[in-house]
Every structure is written in structure tokens, then in C-alpha cells.
Image 1 (cartoon, rainbow, N blue to C red):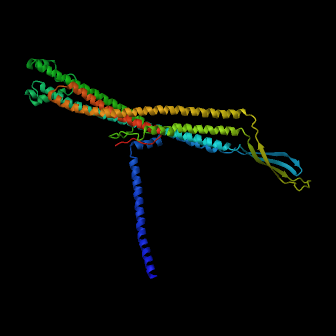
Image 2: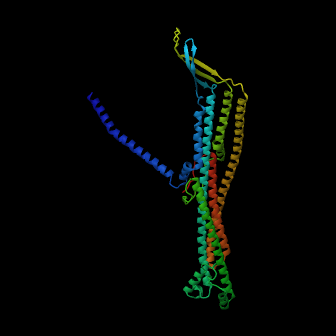
Image 3: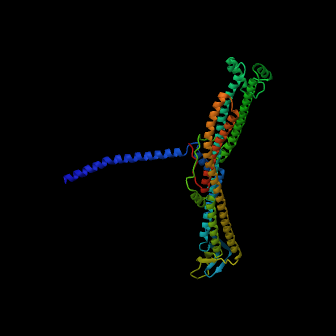
Amino acid sequence: MKKVNKIVYQWRRKILQEVPRTMMRFIILGILILASTEAGKTQTLIPDSLQAYLEIAAKNNPTVQAKFNEYLAAMEKVPQAGGLPDPEFSFGVFIKPMELLSGNQVADFQLMQMFPWFGTLHSARDEASLMAKAKFESFRDAKQEVWFNVRKTWLELYLNKARTDLTQKNLDLLKAIERIALVRFSSSIPGGPSSGGNQQSGEKISGGMSSPRAEGQSGVNSSSMGGNMAGVGGTNTMGNSSDLIGLYRIQIEMGDLENVIDDFKTQATVLTAVMNSLLNREPDIPVALPDTLVQETHGATFLSIRDSILSRNTMLTMLSAEKQAYDERIRMSKRMSYPMFGLGVDYMLINKRPDNPSLMNGKDMIMPMGKITLPIYRGKYSALRKEAEFLSLATVNQISSVQNALTVEYHDRLKMLEEANRRVQLYTRQSDLAQKTLNLMIVEFSVSGTGLDELLKIERQLLDYELVIIQAIVENNIAVAGFGRLMASDGGTQTE
């Protein structure tokens, strides 16, 4: 027995030692779970991220708020539709008491409660609930529309920023080519660096040629060209003229790019105002944009996307709820054509009469009462039922129309997605080849000074390729966001 007690004691002691450790483990595990949850929330909603902008739009957009308030108002109609009619209370007082066998009646009180036909209130409540559901789907549709516009405007802002950066990059490239052209032009002038002149004179000519669009600062006029022709011959003069023409062409191209950059900046101001209007903010608040945009994929087969659109689209679910509400109104109109019943009580206040020996003398009387309506005017009930039937049929037609429109929009988004993917693949290869060609032509131009026309052409072509790639990625993501809008999904745009 002592041995058994010793084993039990050791077992209890072990449990008492393990319990605090186990509890501590659970506490630490819980803290880690809470910390990871908060970290996940922090990573999900980064300030000034697209996901944060979507949350702001859902909370602050006036259109979304209006639709939500309409839904709340529709919900308040449910108890109104499902409630009984107000009870009716009537009373009368006799100016001169009316003599009865049981005494003198001085007043009469009546209370009556009407009850519609069985199931009428249930149908009315169901109709109001379904109409509230339709309002909720309208609210969801407005929110999805605002979210899509936020994504689209955000992507357009990124496209505008990328276009500005790429154009500025090409402008910097042209400035580098301009410096090469300036060096070649200054070297071809007698007294320049390549002609044995001092470096200071060459730098002076280069500085004068940095902006030859301003007359008088080109460093070359008719007299100097005449002097060059007399001193070095016609060949050198023609070389100077071609170098100067090439320099002018480079600076014309630079001026065009500077104008394009200014246009992009103006467009960015407008897009920022549009974005802030969707977020219900001041129009000049800056919008944060990523450095790189990831090309998104829809993540599902096209057939499943189409099925999801037809089953989850908010417009279809809203019209389906309205259709069910009108069907309930049809059933309610039929029941409204049946009689209504009323139950009540009649209380008669009676005073004693001195000369009445009856045992009931002066005792008040209570009489139960019943009431029934006679719906003999059938025209209004028939018209009410036909109105609901026509509305239900009209909703069926609207559902078919919306399905057709969604099918067309689905194919339009699909076409947009396929074209964007094809352009990204094609122009990525073209851009790589154009970049290699441009690098070789810059080397050739810096050595021999030939091929300026082709250099400017390939530079413009490379810029076009890069712009088309960025635009195709943005259109791809807009198409993916369009699929999400049609399927009423809440996925965001990815960035890195």
C-alpha cells in the first residue's frame, strides 16, 4: 500500500510540475498567434497601398454610402410589412343615460383587431425582405464598381508615371548623344581639339552649341562658314554643316520629348484628382505608386470564370431577388382578395337604477365581438395581381438582357487580356533587339559620326516598344480587374 501511495504521490508531483510548463507553452503560443495575426494585418493593409485605397473607397465613397443607407432603409420596411393593422378603439358617451333592464347605460367602449387572410403578412414580410436583399446587392454592385474604378485609375496613374520615367530616360539618352555630337562638331572646326587648337576654344564652341535653337548662340554664322570654306576647303565645310544639322535634329527630338513629359505631368494631375474623388479626399493629395507592376493572371479557366460571372454577378443576384419579391407579391395579392377577420370586445358602462330590483342592476356588461370584410370589388385585386405579374416578367427580361451584356463584356475582357499578353511577349523581344541595336549604333556614331538618322529612328522605336510593354501590362491587369468586377470578387492588384 505504501508503494502505491508513493507512486500516486510521484504522479501528482509530476503533474503539478508539468501543468505550469504546459500553461506557459499555451500562453506563449497564443501570444505568437496574436503577433502573427497582427503582422498579417499590417502586411495586408500597408499605408498608401492599393488595398488600403480600396478600404478607404469602401468606407468613404459617397455613392457606396448612399447605397448602403438605402439598404438600411429597406431593412426597416420588413417589420412594417409584417405587422398587424393597428387595433381600432371606439367609445361613446350617452348625454342622457339609456335605460336598460339591468340599469342605466352611460357609456360604451369597443376594441377591435383585424387579421388579414392566413399567410398574407408572411408574404408581405418575405417581399420586403427580398427587396432589402435586392438593395443590398445594389450596394455591393456600387462598391464593386467603385473598386474597379479605383484599380483602373490607380493603374492609369502607374502607366502615366512609367511613361514619364521612360520618356525622361530617353531624354537623358538624347542628351548623351547630343554631347557626342557637340564633341564631334567642335573637333571638326579649325582650331578645335582635333585640329591642334587649344582645349579652351573647343570648350567654348561646345558651350555655345549646347542650345543652337537660340539664334546667335550656335557658334557658326555665315562669315565663319565662309572663312572655313576658304581655309580648309569644301569638304570640311560640308562636314561641319552635316554635323550642325544632326545636332539641330537631336535637339528638336529633345524638345518633343520635353513637351511629352509636360503633357504626362498634366495628365497625372487630372488622374490624381479622379483617384481622390473616388476616395472622397482633397484632389491634390498624392497617390502612392509602386516601382514595378506585376503582370497578373486570372487564376482560373475561362469556362469557370464565365460560370462564376453568371452565378455571382451582383446585377444578376439583385434582379433575381427582385424577381422573387414580385412572385411573393403575386401570392400576397391573391390572399388580399380573401376576407379579413376581426376580433374585439364591447364594454358597456352601466349605473344602478334605484327602482330596479334585478340582480344585474348596475353591473357592467362585456360582449365579445367579431368582424369580417366582404371583398366584393374584385377589380382592384385583379389589377394588383396583374401588376406584380408584369413586373416579374419585366425582371425576367432584364435578367436575360444583363446576361447577354455580361457575355459580351466577358468576351471583350478576354480579347483585351489575350491581346495584352501577346503584345507583352512580342514587344519584349523587339525591345531587347532594339536595345542591342541602339548600343551598337551609339558606338558607331561616337566613332565615325555616321548613322544619326538610324540612331534617332531606333531610339524612338525603342521608346515606343517600352511604352507599349508597360501599356500592355496595365491593360492586362485592367482586364483581370474587369473579370473580378464581373465575378464580384475582392482581389487586389499585386505589386512588388
